[in-house]
Image (tube, rainbow, N blue to C red; front, side, top):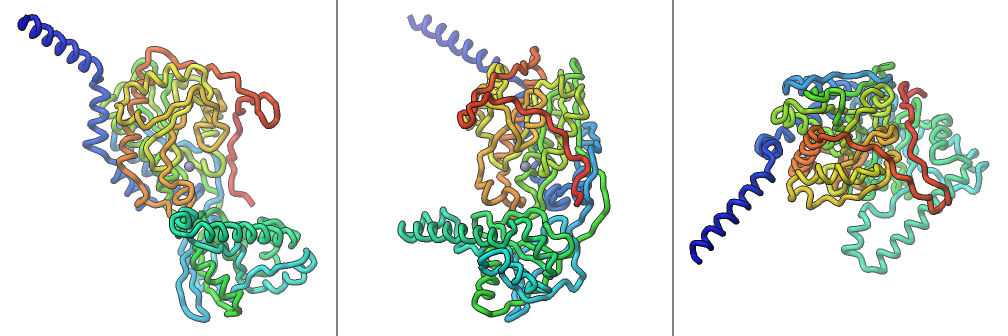
Length: 517
Ligand SMILES: [Zn+2]
């Protein structure tokens, strides 16, 4: 009996150990080890975000980023090139200094908005004014000459710089409700007043500039502590700067109380004429099916309020590091593994749309696209993007990924095609199986997305490493798959709002001649 038991135990041990052995794919194991023990993410992040900096389309920094990526791939033995897809207005940000100089001196926290023309070295110094409450467009027209040589505050004065979550934590229910109601009321009357001027919040900018304003100050609060969204300027000749809420509301109150504050704005920049714009493309050639493609995808450009660390520095770093470890561990993939670092996603998916338009031979032979573009978090959701059989292959590939990574991921099959938002949509529209690796948000929308606080310190490198391992294994599995993926589309459901059949998104042409006035 004892003998039998021992034999049985040995048998059980033997079976379970062979099962474990079969489970462990040595390539997968090696990819995980390389990503974990020899991560290059921190160094790459430093070089891209600290040294190259933000990557606004048409700036010298964007070009530097393109050149840096090609050189980096070269060092890893991966062939890479910069592929021109269009032209853009060339512009380079310079120094911004914003100082209150009367009734006391205080340096203010803000910056010039993108594509704004330069001031002189001395800048402009003038009294700050606000837009008055007007009864109608005639009253506004009568007031308008008063802006001559003045600096105008063009955003609403926020009643609080504390985000809602902070009020929720500390305020009494009554005072939280009171603040929200007051803010809603104030927002409503601000909008009504702008409407009364006869302009929109956009067109009033031109009216103020044409009336001879010396400069404009905006404050585009992002509803978090000390955080503003930073986009482009709409003035053609005079400076437009964005000030942080704290300093903006201080100036606003000073104007309201009759303190007549004066501000000096130095906002330097350079116009560089028309410049070429590029996608950085790198690939590890397939050994069996070189004309079939697994595509890793992340836009390379950013807005320039911060350094574009989480939009989309982190997606960029994940794809670069995944390419590095794939080249090292899996240098002869069956299918070609191509990475696209797209230009000008922020102005309308331009780089990826151009790539899709310029490379039909690649797009029709795509096994899968994996795009990442929503911040630093670990991937928590993957949708089948409306491909009927996506469940079959994606879930099979995901099965090869360690459980400590997939346990965070919710899948949604067959899902819906992406209509926009990021570059997977460009491939989606062309019918290529393309998937978004969607991240945990880490306060992305308020604190980092398109803000002045999108910087290196917000990166969560452990989550990035998680995403590198996930991406590399998915690429490996997609490349090795004996079958080609099905790109059969689902029949889209009705739109409950319109009662109409939804249709698959159509491919759209990029803007290849951007930033023209
Ligand atoms: Zn993005």
